[in-house]
Length: 104
Image (tube, rainbow, N blue to C red; front, side):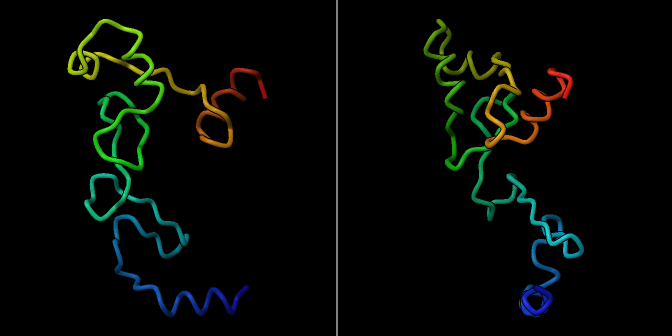
């Protein structure tokens, strides 16, 4: 494993995307506001999730929009999504919230 780490360290520019790449932790946290990051904010401003495509809502937001009587613009301006209801495999935060609610 140490050989692999040495190999990679010799090939990764420590100045590569400095606000996103943490050399000490070997952790890349993409900034959705950086145009080089292929992740996009949900179309609904209050939604904290990111999407793989630009200008789209999460499925839960699309379902809520379909159930309501608002225009897409009114919906996006007023909708506040319910968070913490997804499976643990999809979101660590959701898992932590569920576990806290259950007293785990």
